[in-house]
Image 1 (cartoon, protein in one colour):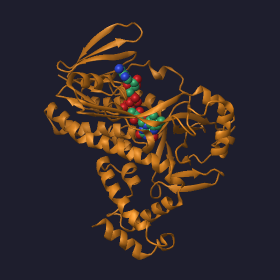
Image 2: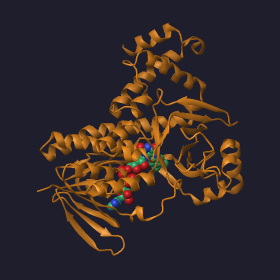
Image 3: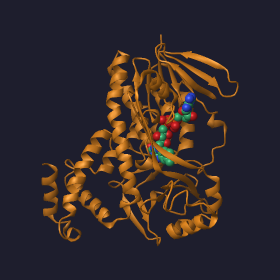
Image 4: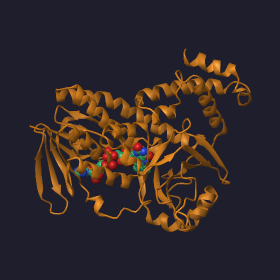
Length: 445
Ligand SMILES: Cc1cc2nc3c(=O)[nH]c(=O)nc-3n(C[C@H](O)[C@H](O)[C@H](O)COP(=O)(O)OP(=O)(O)OC[C@H]3O[C@@H](n4cnc5c(N)ncnc54)[C@H](O)[C@@H]3O)c2cc1C
């Protein structure tokens, strides 16, 4: 008889995971707390857009759906930094043709749910998980409309229910798993740059735009309809914070002073500001990510992170690919889930370290000429010695190297570059052979 799997949450990761499970011949039921997103009109630009990169694509390809996703993805080849005078500086993300991809989270979720259903999963909406019996592998759902409860038995349960996962919460309560929820001091708010009248783009659509300003920053990614979804990240309290931006005048003055070129593109800035919520950002750590052979957690439920490396979804997709590989490897589910926990947890931690690190890079360092020079030097060295040096950004975004390994190598590279950047007149001599040789000697030490 086919194995029966219950997936809690029809978000991006739950939907992709179902595709892997139906491909294995399992009977898959997905229970989602919200109503069916597909029955609402999805307006582009009204939702977060996400950067999809290589490890996400690898997982989509293995599930056989990369080509469908490609149709709603916009390639992003570079960062463009906007300074306070509106002067632009470009920084390519990788080598020629290498890109991350901008996708609308809502459009992507709708597509993934359609594909999940088309491939045999049953989707149930307005069904909120309220309890899990880990010993009997049964899940209790409450219908959010009728309040009726039902218990679903299956061979195993996959908790893909996001940052505030009930599956994880119950596991922690019942089995004393380790848990840490850490909200950072910055919140975010979305804003929209509209399309031009003829639905063309007011900025370069193939770039991620950043307005780096030290303790706060604004960024923008293109949507398919000519608009850009933008996100302001700023401290909760203090100078230039969400708390201090509290009336029309100081909000408009702040934008005019800090982001003048952006402000010219957004005539209804103040009404957007009032309409769009301010949301917080948090890191979730827990261990283990499974209970025996009955339950595991995946995606944000296991490793929610801050969005600054654009990797939360990519990491969740990678969880699905790795789980599938482990199911191929093991006949025994207990061993399979144990190995899944053990090998994915360091990568969840690695991603969280990388994400916090990249916040500083994006909001601060991308405005620093010395940092941009450092990246140019690294690129030259990496082109010369590709076997010895892959830039950290490329390891994370353009490869499937484990996050934990990428982070470790990245720390070593940073140490080397700190020494190199101290060489007198580095801005003049950086192209010389002796600099390249110096880097080589330091990195292979
Ligand atoms: C501002 C921002 C920008 C981001 N940018 C990027 C990016 O550029 N690239 C990237 O890779 N990632 C990015 N992320 C992260 C990405 O959005 C998440 O990692 C991803 O959505 C996680 O998917 P998930 O399916 O695990 O969780 P979710 O998307 O949260 O889905 C969980 C699902 O479970 C359902 N659910 C919750 N509780 C229950 C319950 N009790 N019962 C039943 N169903 C339930 C929810 O309704 C939801 O549908 C960003 C996040 C933010 C906040």
